[in-house]
Length: 274
Length: 297
Image: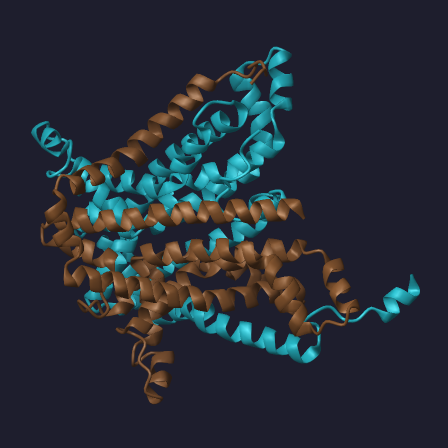
């Protein structure tokens, strides 16, 4: 605070920043909240607690949980393989992990649908054993897993790289088995990063739209996600319902943002201390 | 020294059986989930031959969608870059109250569903929104037209450049800039000759990611564009339209353009990370996404 300000440009840079944030980010969100709030508590509650809306929350949340659980295992395994082992093509695998972030969601959506449709490469094999993915909740899960795949890999990878080998060696010298060292030494050290990655991945799954709508089948009560229900209400010109349901997504996103920030603050404190 | 290396057991998970199983398992799942979609896009795009592919790309509606997507990126990306640089400069070179709040607000679009973003814009510029009626009487069209598409794209990508610059400029401190100004350089001169050379790779990294997202944005744009074929359809929306029209080869031909863009983005990302941008360039603890933490000087 006692530091004398010598650099120029505070007024210009902060002014531009605040203007942009106000017009581009804050104004639309405020308008949405205003619109939802103008409904009045009774109408608002009637819309957000309607059977179809609640079913969409359930479909979205359960698929997001399942997809995040899958990514927890696969993302951790992928990060582990990339950090601890060397094999031909490793750099290519490391680069292609980012594909879900770089590929537009609509493109991912039609590609996954084509693969998992009953006539597709994977769909035809899976239908032979009685599993259908496309147009079922399983399809939503696949799309969510794809789009949120990089989060856990990219949060765990740097922590795993910086893990002090001395800790493992100490545990080994005390006679710990690989299994118990992994579960009792390595996993606890990765836990903060894993949790941060989990919350990012889960939040992304809750908000995902483009990749899902192609593969989901979009049957009300069965395979209709909340983001799509919002979109359908708009197309029906039911703007109040769209505002109310969108506000539920917005509140959830804010809650997830808070959780992520807390978890990341913890993860950071932990790594810094080490 | 020699005794320790000799008696040192292999690291956890280094036994060949575990290693091979893990590598094989990860590669198999990765091939199914990530590689197969990539292959199927090009397979489907050329499934009806190269002529059909070329015809699909050269169709006026597709060309217009490409044009619209490029124009959107040409406006949204530079504006966003200017904002990102201004925000990073304000946040890392000065101390002011509410900085943490500002950081969180900048990050908000990253965690919000694109559909919510689109709906929110509807309630600002739409007929049911704050300015809609006034805009209509002034005959200014924002929604279901190019300005709406650009605004929604700017919303979803607002954090992209800033989040690459802020951790880097935070780590670099203010000493160089302070030295330059105390030697008499103007603010702009300081920025262009001192700051910019230090942040150019991270800046480019943010621009590349921002561009990929703008060109590929689907949800937010699909709410605000009105999906008018040949008029307000960006490339991702055009892909959806073709796909639902059962023009699969055409949809995948259009999709292959965006896929090539995604592959270029990844290559650029790898090259820029080698220059120290992105996760490679940050101090290890901040390597996690969302560089919101650790900002208190």
